[in-house]
Amino acid sequence: MTQEYVTRIADFIARYLSYMLGAGVHTSRVVRNSKRIGDALGVDVSVHTSQKTATLTVAEKGRPVMNTRVLDIPAFPISFEWNADLSALSWAAYDRKMPLEEIEARFDSLVAKPRMNPVFVLLMASLANASFCRLFGGDIWAMLVTFTATMIGFFTRQHLTRRHVNHYIVFVVSAFVASLCASTALTLGLDSAEIALATSVLYLVPGVPLINGVIDITDGHIQIGISRLVNALMLIVCIAIGMSATLMLVKDSLL
Amino acid sequence: MIAVDIISDGLFAAVAAMGFGSISDPPMRAFRYIAILAAVGHATRYCLMTFLGVDIATASLIAAFIIGTGSVWFGKKVFCPMTVLYIPALLPMVPGTYAYKTVFSLIMFLQEISSPTQGSEYLQAMIFNGAVSFSVIFMLAVGATLPVFLLRERANSMTRGSRYI
Image (tube, rainbow over all chains, first blue to last red; front, side, top):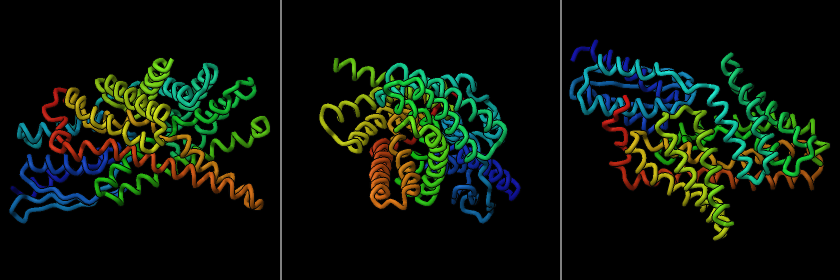
């Protein structure tokens, strides 16, 4: 194995690793999959990860030819589809002994797949929040208010995200918009108006980083697990700030 | 009437899981199984809490364990890693209201800081809600990960031989 070939493998594994970590896959799976691809190509892979960067060493088995680098982890939106597809790619590379060129070509076509239609996601998220309202004991009118409020709030979120606004600001503004729309339930005099108001912002709760953080901690990747939990906590604080702005506006009708 | 309550609880949990899951872009083939897992899990937790009086953390642990075990079974069918199926299915059980109330009580505590009685009430509410939300999230993730520790070989090769790449 030449130095150039090891460097090319390291180039690819660095991309693979940063795409998976960026798309919100828990750490032990990313490390396991990278090592599997390394096994398929005949190299040892060692990884150290943190929230925004990772360190990667690729070394040929039994020989001192190696490549080490620090890589930045880009912030992709969470994608379970990449999680499933890229994990399958690592098994395919291992089982079929694919050459590096074929793995790279497949990787490129997998990450180029289009994401889910945003309008469909908007509709599904609004339906989900309305059923959440029902689970907390809201009636049909509260569900309708929550549905509409979520739709407007989520639409705001999608648009601000597309314009690359800072994500803390996105969360504060969307929480404010959604809860302000839901506060119309108070004006309409619904019985379960408070439930509608409280559930209207729950579509923003970062459930995936929260669960991923605990999975990482139970797997022994304690530092990155705590980083993920702290990140999620910051977003929850932003939701609370946006919502308390609404509550201060409508406080009198709540009491 | 009880049966209707349980079924509607599962149904709404399934819709919630599919909706919140769709924000994170799961593969289309996984939706059906996410819905089944979420419905079974949430209905289990509802039954445990309403009829047997189990506390929310233990009930979440048992429900999450059922979801995790189910995701080992279903994941092999659709070639998805376990997390792709069980994280969306757990999302309706994430204690969003408790987490929100924790931070909200903190904000209210800071506003009422000059009044000792009200201030300490909000501080108490913050610790109460914070403890509940942390332990429920912890139990959810641990319960769903337990099957990975028990069935390591099977759980780590879910996407092996996938037809979808």
